[in-house]
Image 1 (tube, one colour):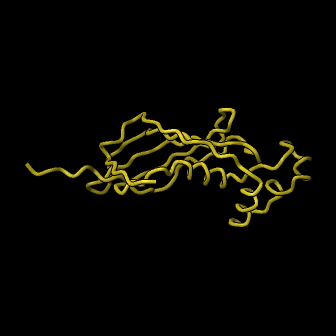
Image 2 (cartoon, rainbow, N blue to C red; image 1 turned 90 degrees about the horizontal axis):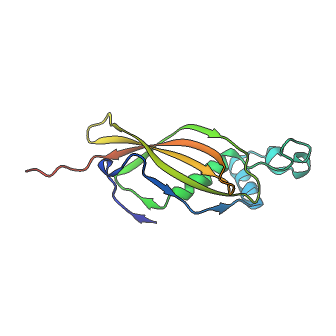
Image 3 (cartoon, rainbow, N blue to C red; image 1 turned 30 degrees about the horizontal axis):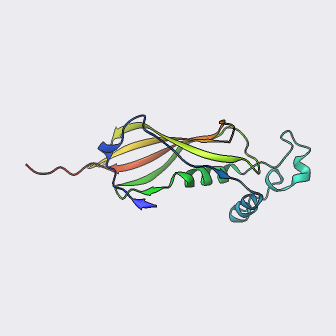
Length: 151
């Protein structure tokens, strides 16, 4: 991780960045259940899941989101901060042994409500190893405008 100042004007619609992959393990399932208190059988009971439509344990959607977003955190931009996430959707199930990766595309730029700032929307898609989108959301950033030099 490193610091890289990126101002509102530096973001270009359509720019994309792609992460490396991360294979999900049984340990991930257990640790996430412990952190969240979500011990539903869909995530942890292998025998019960054999009787269900997917036939195996399904990753917590919040875990896929957390890991997928974590993969995108490769640089620290001191000129921006996260305002949150919109339109989060769990599209396909993720299982133990699946490898996910994330793609972030700059999808919108708007004037900020606060002087000196703009808003940038990053559309985030998380893919499995088969190239299928398993999760999608929009990440909203509040970003400083580039300081103007007095003439």
